[in-house]
Image 1 (tube, rainbow, N blue to C red):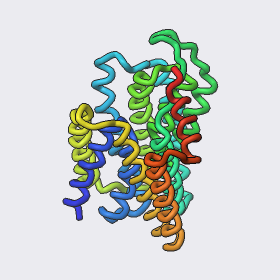
Image 2 (cartoon, helix red, strand yellow; image 1 turned 180 degrees about the horizontal axis):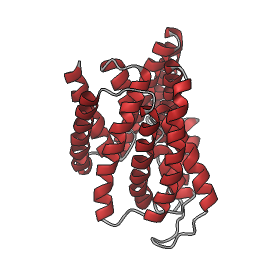
Image 3 (cartoon, rainbow, N blue to C red; image 1 turned 135 degrees about the vertical axis):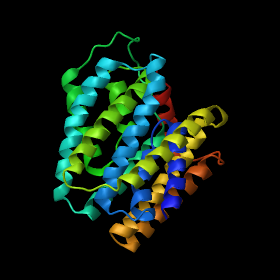
Image 4 (tube, rainbow, N blue to C red; image 1 turned 120 degrees about the horizontal axis):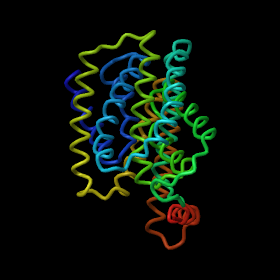
Amino acid sequence: MIGLTIGLAVFVGVALGLLGGGGSILTVPLLAYVAGMDAKQAIATSLLVVGVTSAIGAISHARAGRVQWRTGLIFGGAGMAGAYAGGLLARYIPGPVLLIGFAVMMIGTAVAMLRGRRNVETASDGDFSLPIPKIVTEGLVVGLVTGLVGAGGGFLVVPALALLGGLPMPVAVATSLIVIAMKSFAGLGGYLSSVQIDWPVALAVTAAAVVGALIGARATAMVNPESLRQAFGWFVLAMSSVILAQEIHLSVGIAAAVLTVIAAGATLACTRLDVCPLRRFTAAAAARRAVV
């Protein structure tokens, strides 16, 4: 099973490299259900994987000058405080409850991916008026979520940096990697006070994810990112139903899976039909994303 875990970790890294985020949402289920780790150990290990992978991914962005350090360090510092507190708080929360919270986070991630990223009007590079209290508050909240369940990275950080920090989307994506790395390591620090990590397995999975991320980054030019993001969103929704079935009840997981199939079918039908009620909502979302 360790060999299978490492092989699948490469896939997780490829998803991270292709999407610039989101692949980490697969790390906890991989470690919990394939590697056989308990919930808290899986979450702690995932924080290591996400932190290292994000830090390495941020290096190329930093060399290209796309990282807005002031905003990233303010948000990341607040996120570290929240993540460390979340890691400490997790010792008082049962593992199954954490996994249920993780499944909810997966659903939120999938919905965000299916809707796509929203572009907003931003200031020019280097000309940012920072609402520091809002950034600190948002950083604390996002960090707390990350520390508790080992997720809630890019899909929460990127919109926060774009909307609150006024960063252009390419800069927000690059800066988010710095933030994600900072708060992942802080969350890991909180968990290490009460959780023992299997370091050989953790380091092997991390190395595999890094290799996959480098492969994925090189493959971005050959893949339609919008189609990939949509497919990954539906896959994450399906995975969340598996966790709900495992941690709550089989019927809950089946219900979630059925709703996912219905939603996917309706979405597919709307792409082929001339008249579709859902198109009004998708068109409105697309219009919002097109605003610059």
